[in-house]
Length: 104
Image 1 (cartoon, rainbow, N blue to C red):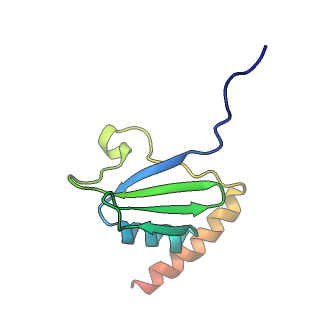
Image 2: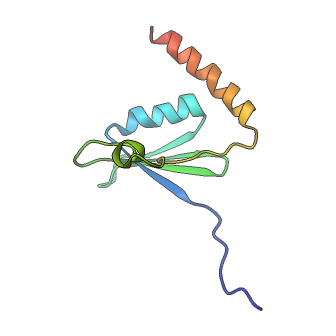
């Protein structure tokens, strides 16, 4: 039996934000993503890349951003699945602690 389906290699998660720069800065500084801004477009957005993950941050035009959990009392907006969860936890823990200390 032949498989007529093509392989899907990636999925970009689209997240809405009221402040693209602040959100992109978080993904860059705290989670190690590379950020490419597309703020000159009519539909302002930033693309955030790390390894095989792409997140697209889109500027809201109206309304407040509410998480899926807050809105529907179920689900999440996105999952990150690291190869080594303990290593990832330690990586971000150090950055978060440093950020917290700098904001005191």
